[in-house]
Length: 188
Length: 173
Image 1: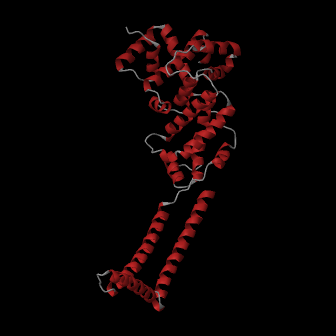
Image 2 (image 1 turned 30 degrees about the vertical axis):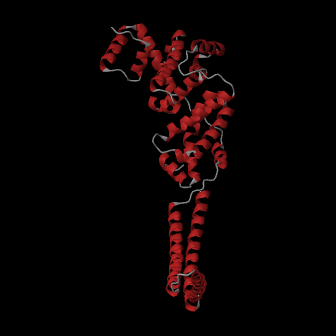
Image 3 (image 1 turned 90 degrees about the horizontal axis):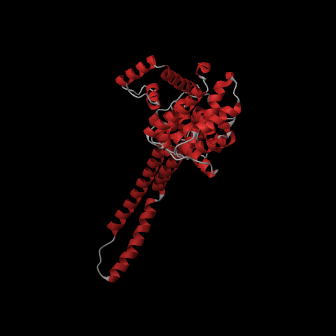
């Protein structure tokens, strides 16, 4: 893969070098797939939606003016496409600041899986999978894609303060569960 | 002493507190076992989340996607300049011919004011125009104009072929 910046790759594609789009695809496909897999909870759907996202981004490349990072712009497409997919499947999409009963959901997951102590990392991953779509999307963008709260707010089209509220809630939910089951020492 | 909420702990973890608040949290951390437990659990969550593994798409994803991309028709800027300059030269030549013919016709028709005169003027105009065309496209002049157009077509053809080759190379890269 050629070592060029996102902006250079985009300019090259705009000039007609279609093959250079594969640089962007290779760069973002796995991280975007992780985000979609967590939101849609299904590998097959995630891969199908990811194809659509890259096609949408390619067709809209002329409208990308470089005012934000390509990654932020692209994750906005990914997030919105995932929401559309979820709504088309008539899944529940929570409103931005609705209260959630995370403890109940996560508690049931924790108990039902009988995690071994050596699989605690796996347990954390499974718990994240049980968070509502918006929460898992924020955790993915913030931690896996190393986006700032400002970039996450731009990608999800919500305010920065709401990003922080959702981020804190997600962390606190996991934290409370760890405390409740005395996992701190085991995990450390 | 301030109330140490979960929100404050999160802000402490992200380094978003001011100096005074940070000092208060540090003090609470050193004195309260319960508070330390909460903070350690939160830091643990933060560390684990930072180490989340990226999942992999199936192999062949990129090639499958690239095969679905629509062909992007984009005329390179240099090609646009070339087409514009060739068009400009052709338009200038055509305008020159028209101006030349008009000047000959205008100089050859005498002025008449009556309605029969206007009819005569039209006859004269056609006759003079035809003779001027004959004069322009006869013998040596025809060779010169033909050579200029042929040269233009040859040059255009050469560059057009070169651009096609470049575009094909870009596509197969």
